[in-house]
Length: 83
Image 1 (tube, helix red, strand yellow):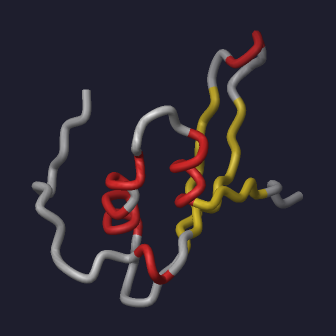
Image 2 (cartoon, one colour):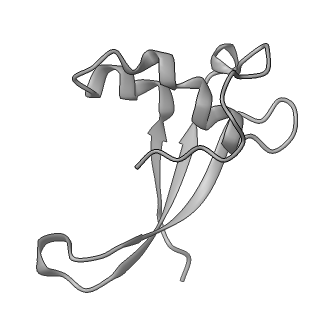
């Protein structure tokens, strides 16, 4: 049986986050795009220890508007450390 896929509009993080996150939206788009014109990426996500349940494997489709794709190379190094 195929797994269900959860969908998430990447730009919606702007409305869900408590800081001005819109400046960060182009970074994951640039990292996730495979080829010109790509407007989505499907990820396999392992969820562990949520609400006392065992590990769960889920599929997540991130999608974005073509207008959110950066037009110039980002001023961020290739191997970004965020921790």
